[in-house]
Image (tube, rainbow, N blue to C red; front, side, top):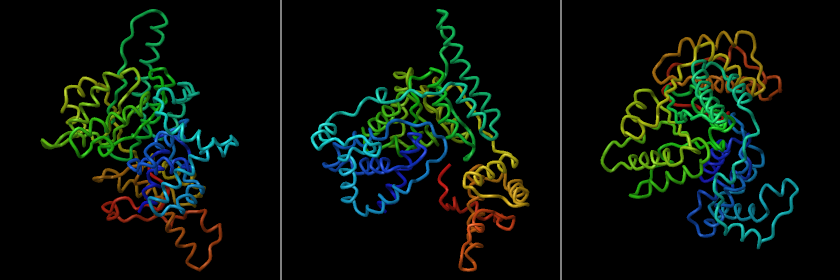
Length: 410
């Protein structure tokens, strides 16, 4: 359904630009990008992308605003989406909400005809220090070994800065990283912080962050993959390109275009090494095979950071953090019940770590809600506290994938 597609794409755009909330501008960009092959939309895509600026610094999952739900409610067809894009951009977009005058039709048309500005011209330098970002990094639950390795990488950057001031040669830091480990261990969250750290420490001239997978980089036709990958890279510079499940790019047969994406990526890592860092993530064995599949990857990825499974105690803290974010209290016995489940499930095949903790929290929330409506009416006190009776998990649910209730993605 178009409405759901635009909602998901808007959320992805807000995450990519590190915005704390999903706003109408994200929906407009999602619609313009989805319908970019339509003549009436093609010229407006650069303008729709521009309204996403400036980038933010949020690391939490963006919250969908009421304005977004209201806007999406008006969109049922592609023609509705096109009308929404045209109307939003013609009104001046988010600038109108800030009390700035909306440009006239002539100005809008003129702006749409202009090429999109280069990424390095539109990125706002982060107004934060390395110490500030590291302090935020330290607040993450667990990940002690990861924090030490990231701090070591930043220390090399800072040492180079001092050597440069003294007129000494630099030891080129390895900004490209490989994150290995199972799902739900914080790889994406850490990658976002690394982008900010690189910018704050002066390793990169901007803090852009783009999350991409195989579908974002590989096309289905000869010659299109290089273009698609290059566009992602151009949108990222200066900043960090995070490729999750990067091993999926490794070609499995002669007509697999993943090799073309890798070749384009390797060239960009060399040509733009002063403004682009690539972080590739996935399971350890698969990532070793991926890096070994291309000599260029092997020579550029020199720093490997392993993300271990969270301990039951750490997962319990993560569960408590979800409750706190949702303004949910935990009754006596909940923490003990949650930790007991984590002790039972940790180490099982395809265990989701923080994702499992989120699913357990959402499941408990659903049981709390069902209990509250059982008598036909809901008092606010009934939907603000999870009790020990709400904590339950069947092993078989691990095989069904994520059961989403609506608290966002990790």
